[in-house]
Length: 398
Image (tube, rainbow, N blue to C red; front, side, top):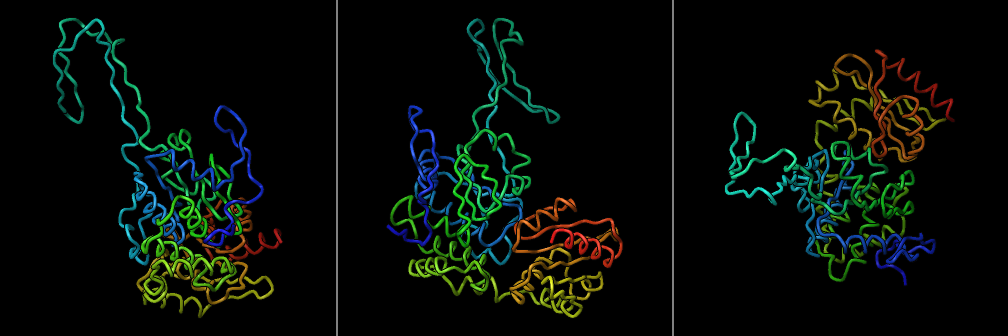
């Protein structure tokens, strides 16, 4: 049967997985995902540190659905929800760091020494525990051991690798290495790092995959807030149906979500009709000095301190400029913005639909890939030198 939401979550190429009693059973990734969720009670949804409408919308939709199934769920990301996405239900509950991952247990052997009284107090940031016992307590009778982790399942969304989660992973790596991971993604560059990998490169967005998962988890789980969150992911990832990700399957899903109460007008208003005037002014100034390489379909932009001062913006507003440039010139292979940092060294952001190109550039330049962007720091003090170096590298890779 054709899945309701237009993405085939049961492909014929099913992986072999160990079943009960070590018997080999054939389960599709979608079936494995449902099984893993059903067996779990405390679930962490971890998002890339570079948040977007798809990752956050998908996470909130999935979290709401899991709570309906009486699961305890938390959503974590290094970044807070951007202003344009705060209209989504429960966006304010996003956790920026994980606390109380597990208890630590102090065990005392009382087979020979009975404890008659226990009390504690804090002094100079030190917790002191006092035990009253008729006999002497030896150090060997006391043990400090870590208890079990609070979470029994981690779901990653829109993350090609664990490193893309930022400090949510790096500060809690022991958790990730000891618990099952359900890896949900639509990026071809995904490293398949999960115990279960629900990776669909043909899907338009993670929201498309999560919609199918919601359907598979049970009936009547798709309400208006969930549908709105999923449609937000689709609209954000397809740039409001203006890029190549706007497939017939994605459009079919959008129609279904709207029939389930998704508030399309609210989404469009928040994503696209509330663009800050100062950012639009910055975009206008930079486009006035645009350098377009028609042969390589590359746009070069340069922001100067005067641009930030005149528009009351900062380098953190430049990803907005790149997104707008991508909408204005959908056939681009690459768009780059350079600007001087506080030490007058040239930094840059490169955006491309070709993730493999960004990864190759990152290997050569030592940059960091976040979604469809590459963050670059150079030792150059002139934009012309940084551009020349990057152009030479692009020529060698073509």
